[in-house]
Amino acid sequence: MKKLYSLALILLPLVFPGIAFSQVTLPTNNGDIGAQINAAVAALPANGGKIVIETPVSGQCYSFSVPIVLSKAIILAGQGPSTCLSFTGSGVAVSLYGNSTAFPSGGIYADGFGLRDLTLLGSGTGNGQTGIALGGTSNSVGFYGSGLTISNFGLGLQFQRGVWNFKIEHSIFSQNAQNVHWASSLHFGGENMEFDSVTFTGGTFTNSVEFDDYTDSDFSNLNNLTFVSCNFDDAQLVINNGAGSIRLYAPHFENPGSGSGTEPFVRLSAYTAATDVVMDGPDFYNDQNNPYPPSFIELDGGPTVTITQMRSVNLDGSKNVPTNLLINGSPYLTLIADAPLRAAQAQYVIASGNPYIWVLGGQDATDQVTSQAPFSFSQTYGSDGQSPVVQIGGDGYDPIVGFNLWTGTGNSYYGMQLRETGPNELDFCSNGAAAIGAGTYNCNAGVVNGVFKSTVPDGTPPIVVTSHTPPVNLNASPATYNSSGSQILNPHITTGKVILPPSGQATVPFASEARFSQTPTCTISYQTGAQLVAPRMLSSNPYPNQIVVFGQPYIGVYFICIGN
Image: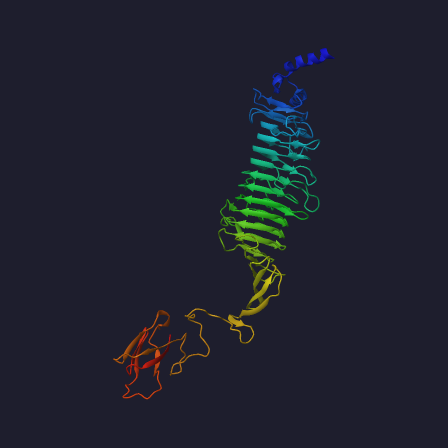
């Protein structure tokens, strides 16, 4: 046994050049490249290594029927897109699982194994083949792919149980019947999954990139999925029930093959479990006009969705897409700073349900909403306990605008509402301090057929004006009239007294609030009731900004002026 074992170690580098450095360059013969790769995997140390596939001089693809299985921490690399592996067998072309090493202390997983710089082809979208499968038999943690083209399979990438810390960048999934699939039945894995600068082009449009395939029952453990600068061309993105923390940054959606039919470009749904999606700066380009897509995004059930700076364009220059977003159900939707409506007739359409919608910023305030149901708008400026909450909508379909203003104590709020309680009637209602949604509202004032009416108890001023100069169109009761019987509108009174000097003439200027717009009517009288000796005639000359009084020296004189 010792001699045979030593002989095997001597022959191993001869069969696989470079094995002493845990790297193998293939092919070594004219056999099936899949079988050669599997033999190299078996020969490499338990901690893995690297297998390099050289591009043939002919520039043709290597044809293989033996499925490739990478069950160690191995990098399978080509020399660029020219390195082509064409799978003619059945099942999965490349499977990766159990890709661990013994090096990390306290654990067995190590990032960085995977596929690099090669093209992987199937034999047709209808042949039931899968390009790449991760996990399943055992965990596949730390997969990294770069410079890949996965094309012409029934399914390009199949996630199975136990996949996390996954990343593919600068790669293409092209013309597969379905490009990527994550099943709802995967209850283990799903952390830190990332596609970076990846292009998805679909052999078929519907469900091309699909995560959580169930909509009404089971849901997986997918909880961190990120797309960075990815293209979806003729490839519908579907994120269903229970998918959490899905983030898309600067994605591009287009149907250049004009094969999207009556489907939206993106479908997001949540029925029995939450779905949380953020789309930051998505661009939608529609090339199809017969028919136009019903929407670019469809929200079904109750997902939580935030969309910032969305832009949509019809390449024929029209705005014939009915809406950017079609809503069926009760999602929580936040729209922030959306671009002008270049392709759609409405920003969003609520077809059914009772959604909550927050709209912050954006452009094109007209033709924004077609709603069959109430909806809400909220904007906060501080913590939840200190910020006003504004709600539009209410029970059933009664239009209500509600304001809840923080009282400064605990969770108490002063609630105020504007209600349309009858035809051509808008009521102003308020309650005392209470929790949001609690308290009894009293409607003490309203506008009915354009007339303001107050219903407060007798003796309560319906309007309190603290200005010294009341509004022009506010007339006090009792009214003020001149001697000819005409009402003096917006009158005010300026009064005062002056002690006449030795000359018997005094000028009293009016301060700014006491001045009139035109000469007022004034009455004057002496301040004393004693009999005057040789009294002078008492008279005055009023002006808008002052009054000049003539009379008995050293005697006080009262004046009252009325005007406007």
